[in-house]
Length: 383
Image (cartoon, rainbow, N blue to C red):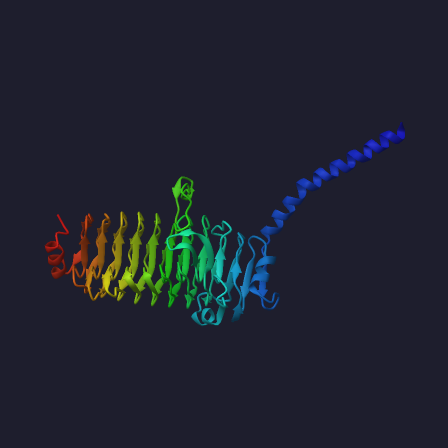
């Protein structure tokens, strides 16, 4: 009997120990994450991705100047990946992630949140991820040459130079319409795509029942602020393409010297999208070849964007057959256009503002060139 009792006692002790370990171990791991580490590349790790793989939530991956030929994936981790000084342009220019045309240079597709941060790099020579899925271009497309941001991912991307990337959709950056990243203080230039040379925010692969992202009842979405979008090229949306139920915020940014073959030299807004375009300088963009519409901004097919306090000047829509809206072209849409300065733009019809086929904007407090106003009134654009 004593032997049986001893055995039972030993079993109970083992069980209690197991319970304590199960309860204590996760707490130990959480406490460990409260003590963040800095992982140095290449001093401690030969590549950025190897350091990211080792990093725990809250850790910092610090990258020295150099050229790193790799394609990074955050894989949902709440970590900061940064150059030594993201505010020093010389450091950013010499800390280069080179994608070697093997897909997106950086991918966020693991439900990242704002504690996933990418800061202070030159991101170049990406070719986008090949997605074999029905989309606006057909059955497959390369997406996100420089950076690809998947559905419900919301990283912070700041103080980077995103340049020299190529994709079908989003040459510099591609973001799903249900993502909620913040892109701030980046330069996005000299990228190429069919749709969205610099940036594309769209529901190209959106499921029919996909829901927008809400936090505490507040809808959150893609935000681009204090960025410079320049010298990008595309068929539609040379600088930025916003399409298919997308409603990002484009705020206090410079959008200049971009070109589109068809429409939206600076920004193209399509297909039931309702972005907020606020306080931007939209300058010297161009749309068109045979036809050209919306040198600065095109708004097409049941869109309701809000455009407030922008300066839209010196853009042009050109076309050997026809062109309209050097500044803004609106087609079958009802934007709110308020308190903008729209001047010095060029096109055959409505140099500053061209309203076409059931366009029904709300116009309030804009400064428009008199000749442009006369032309669009003559075209029957305003009631």
